[in-house]
Length: 103
Image (cartoon, rainbow, N blue to C red):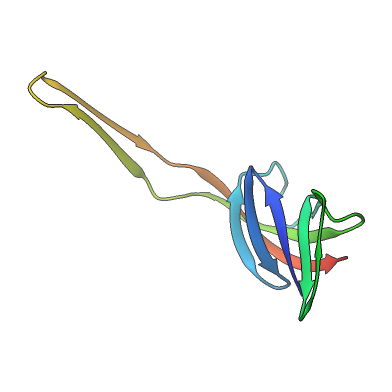
């Protein structure tokens, strides 16, 4: 069984037992979270598509860890204008493990 969920403004296709890195969620490590925004649930040939969410469907996950992604380097330059700008960014993330998908 798989599901398409929305968290942090992004959509993810998840399967039970899978670990994914999502935008930072304010939850303690080891705690259980429930994601209610489930757009699609599928199992084999049967697929339920929501309008916009599937009624009564939810995904239960547990928080594995918090961390920061690798640094992204931003470099802006205008030729012949003596303008250069260096910038870096590290995005926070929460790693979750999908425990159960209930439709």
